[in-house]
Length: 375
Ligand code: GTP
Ligand code: MG
Image 1 (cartoon, helix red, strand yellow):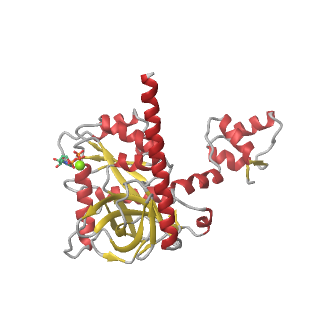
Image 2: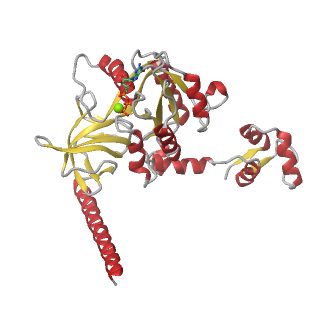
Image 3: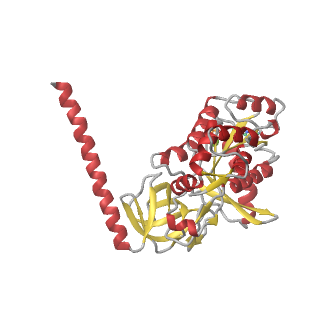
């Protein structure tokens, strides 16, 4: 299925047509640039030139996992906002940057209300093309990545890597880069603290190049924005860059289905019972929905958004606090909405049995080891 002309292939590979034709000619496959190649052949040619190829089928397979999409969702995809986390070395200004963004953007739309702390918040940005949103997760980036790595899904679409311009690349900077790369999450670099006299943004860029992050202005493909989390200088540019990357990433979800997503945080509240912050990654979550998160289940009794307002429904990429679960689910657990409560309860019960069995098996295994080591 699928084919490509030699001409198009050369374009995509950014390789001269003559080079490609030469290779194909000697193999007896093609003699001119308008000939079409089937995908396996095109792939073989590209790999010969040292270029990794992902066909759109492979791409959409991969997306189905990372974005929690089913086959049916592919027919009804709508753009969704990016979910962004902030990473970087200690004291490089992660919290300050989030605070600045939150004050400047969230406070604006709040009319004096108190911002609820739910571990995630969104900002509204007015663009020429209309209003756009960005959702920030308050969890440390590496946790957001590792929580779901096991299942291949992920909660973050873009990582902001904060590097202090007066300190440069440090151990946790490098760790953050490898976390983001392992998760396949694009990195936007915020070179922070440029208000300081001792700031050396170009030195930071040079150091980042040693870790294969090459700034756009030096011919690479990593966006790096010098900012100050204190004065707010260029923070707007950073936010615009996030929207740009989000467009390139082509983030979509199907809002017209039962919700799926991830537990960001959960705790037991004395007055309200189990309270969970859920990130909706696909579908729309509604009050009254029957929900399962591992062995935990319940009916969504109430939802509170990041502005502290009660809401009836939550769209993909947004986080909400949910009341009505029968227990506290672990952070990182996936949740799913079922068509009715009975089904949800059955699914959660089955999961509870599974979990008990695997705990038992683990206990048995460790006992066997002990016995072996005795004999
Ligand atoms: P950890 O959470 O401990 O890893 O630190 P962090 O990365 O969240 O850094 P934080 O925002 O707490 O900032 C550390 C210190 O740097 C604070 O004293 C901030 O006031 C200061 N700081 C952060 N951003 C800037 C900036 O742009 N300019 C200046 N001059 N100082 C900054
Ligand atoms: Mg901090």
